[in-house]
Length: 125
Image: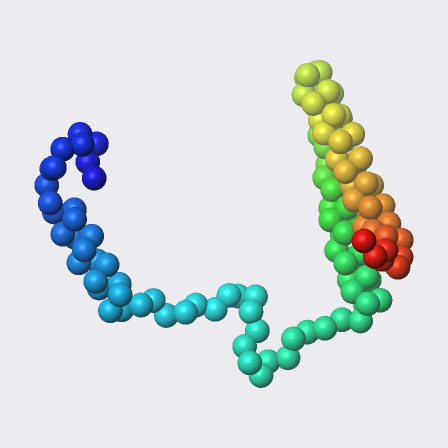
């Protein structure tokens, strides 16, 4: 396998062959996923309502984090305004607008998904 497409040095084929023989004789041990549960360990389960509360809390938490970032961007825009940097002010105001939309949208979407969409009976397709 060389780029010149000639016979070349047979070292590569020799090394490849020896490696394949060694790999066949010494297979890698099966690794466990960090998310897998071993036999005998209980699988954590939540009731449907507890799951909704947990997943809504995660979504609202992420939405609140985005709103904190939006407030930080608004403060930065004010700081740049005082410094006379209008271009930076516009950039941070745009960040504020988009982070606010994302934060509020995330909070509303989390609530809607967990308490309206998932609460409906599924339709057989």
